[in-house]
Length: 111
Length: 114
Image 1 (cartoon, each protein chain N blue to C red):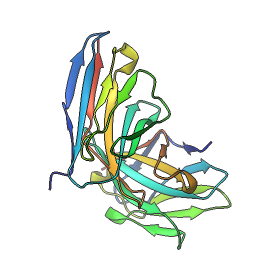
Image 2: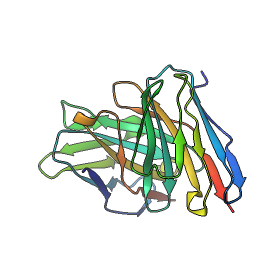
Image 3: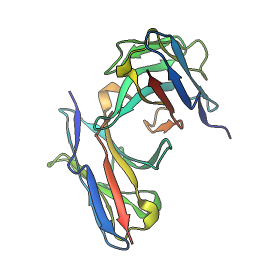
């Protein structure tokens, strides 16, 4: 039972580079989410998806792009990374009961 | 817009003592409420949830929480903590009309001392 996985787990990139964080879930959950976790802010929603090909902005979407061509995958792309995007990124999935299941996180450092 | 306030950023407590982690929310509509735990370098794990029904909710690892609608609170309690409960705890709320979007509090670090 793989559950929900994220890759890479750690990433260092330079300012201005494009970087993609991957999220894969094996449960066929309809909803998927991307959050960033920063000290003092808890988790903030970046984007979410209710189903394949349906995505919507969360609280902090600027500088990020998402796609969802398959139910099980929900990649997050930073088109031109900035230092303010240094954070820990969590992917989550859920069904209608509103309980979200979280991946292990990706620690991204932008230099 | 909904918001969540966790009133303590850190709570130190001795092993086997009781603990309460406080959470208040603001929302003008009916809500679902959650507590998640995050151990170091791991993702979040659901402790318990309130969707409807009894206002006292029991979760994993001996934790429980009580939904108080009049005070818009959802405090987390455990009667006797263990060293292994040392972690960060997050309260979260979603509004029933807006589906699965969660709003999280800033988190409370529980430090259990021997």
